Image (cartoon, rainbow, N blue to C red):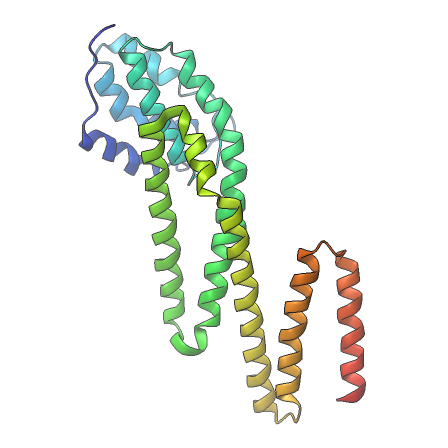
Length: 254
């Protein structure tokens, strides 16, 4: 085994910062491959001083690559883990290629479910519910909260990949993102229901309605009931028929 240069903190930080621009050179053929190669290049340059070995390392990261841009940080860290072992002669280059191919699909699904379908709606609904209190500053709060969470998780995933390599799968599983995502979606539903009730009260008061409080409480209760029914796998059309029936009853008596 040959003695390969080790990666210093400065190089690892540069790779992480470059990974934030993973999709800046997205292309239909390789998708995120150019962004990945750009991110890890400072490390490859240090690990492979000889030009021929450096070019070979870059080429193996120009194959097709596509995953969720946030969770990709775990793969970027894992790439550095394996490339250091390859440079020391402890692994074959095919190992890092197989590592990327095996993880990019499952991590893409995990990232989509947590970030796009859970975190962003939850933070958006929470900040929207705070508009009556914060007014325009609710938008600033959304930007701050969302980026704090997603940047912290990016850094955490990067460190897991860098320190654990293939074992990062176990660490990501222990994070239990699907369960956390379900809790965030419940928070989003509660915030959206609260905001809807506030809007009903406000509009009713401005319009001089007599049944404002009853209608707003009914809307909120219906939202909670609909969420619980859907969570128990009651068909959507049953929930819609129930809501339509209650709307007809409310219109007849109010």
